[in-house]
Length: 231
Image: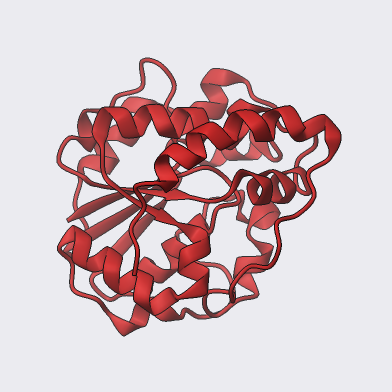
């Protein structure tokens, strides 16, 4: 099985990669199209030069690596906004697609703490909704996972035809061997963890200047949220 897990940033996506990566029957890939996206778009992301220097930037070569299997399974952490026009998608035809979502207020607040002045394109809601319309798949909400990790992971495994493994509920503290070089900027909280954090509290306040982004993102989030998987 090859799982393509699609999400925007600040969305529990790294914890989910660590969860699947702690299974003995999976290998994982961390945002393999990130370097091609940065090289092609010129986006001013933290550590962009180091990412481009360290990781493969040819989208065709990345697509080839995404077509190869795992041991016996492969879990790929992807972001829909990394898939620029012209990037190959033939590798995704036989994948099991899962869309991980999170309330935009939480995404915006968390993202803005790591990178100033986020745009709607940066947080991926529009691109994810468009991608879901094209390829379909299972939708899971990170809030539901944090509130009930075992129940949601069991439900997800059942939905995609995979046996549940208790190893998914925890992982060793510290970096994962498959982390991208960008982990040093983005993954501090996950590196300090050994499992999923508890249920989230009230929604954070979103600054006035980011309210238009919140309003636009909510439309796409709610459309996917209505069809999400439940425990």
